Structure formats: structure tokens, C-alpha cells
Length: 187
Image 1 (tube, rainbow, N blue to C red):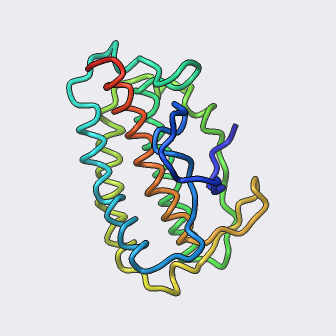
Image 2: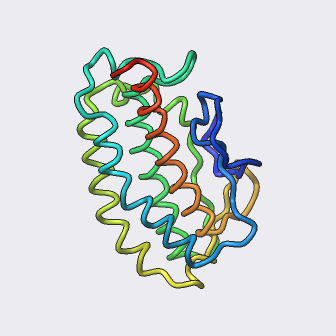
Image 3: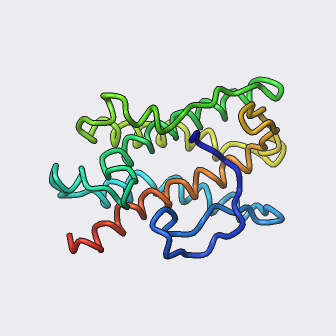
């Protein structure tokens, strides 16, 4: 299954281990306050993710957050992959007229060798990517957030403000996979 920015029907907390904070949902109307909140969530992600994995052992990192799900190690590597792709998509949308983005199969990517290694390079990548990308995101005005890209897999045009909403949720979603697993195991 490929990654998706398709909104879901509910944003409430869930007992479903796949969605510990609930499924992604866009508000009907996006306000400047929503944009500010999502930017704050994106800014906070590197520290939150570092805190979520602090002092986990190799065995703990190789624990799946749910039966059939990814390991905590894979979750960290996935966040780096996903946010790297998001940054590129945003830059393309800001510099081209409705560019076609390149989808990727997150389940294939997560099984590559680099997703089995030490998480520190991915944590560093997330920190650096957010440090570099956040000033750009914070500089955007209302018209910039209306810029778009074409998602060929979903066969639809995606607004940058929707991408921002998704990636704010995405970071919280995967951090919750880690913190929920820690709570369940008493780590």
C-alpha cells in the first residue's frame, strides 16, 4: 500500500492500534490559526520523536507497534523518508505550476536495508530537514498555501495547506505509535 494524503472521516482518538490519535481528517475550513498550529506541531516533532525513542534498546526498537505493523525502528526511518518526500513536494509546488509528484510505496521503502539500521541518522535527518524547511513554511502567505501539486496515484490535485495538515498529523501519528508501545510494555 502506498503512502497517502487522503483525508479520513475522523480525527478523534482511537482504540485502533494503527491510529492511536485517530485517522487524519481535514477541517471543512482552514483558518490562519490552523496553519499556525500545524506549523507549531511540525516544529515540535524532532524533539518529540527524540524523546519518544530515548533510551530504547535495540530489542525494544525492533518491537512492532501492532501485530503485522512496523517496528519502532522502521517507524522512525519512515518519518524521515516521508517528511523528506513532503519537503520536496512542497518545494516543487512552490516553484512549478501544479507539478506531478512521484509517489512511493512506503512498505517497499521500509523494507530496504537502510530502514534496519541505527535510527540516529534518521533522527538527525528529521531534525535537519525541519530546521531547514520550517523557515520556508513560516514565510508562506495565504496564496502560497493554495498552490498545488498533482498526485498521480490519487488522481487529484492537492493543496499545500492540505499537505501541511497531513504532515503535522503524520508526525503526531507516528510518535504516538512509539509512545503507545512504550506505555503498553511499561518502558
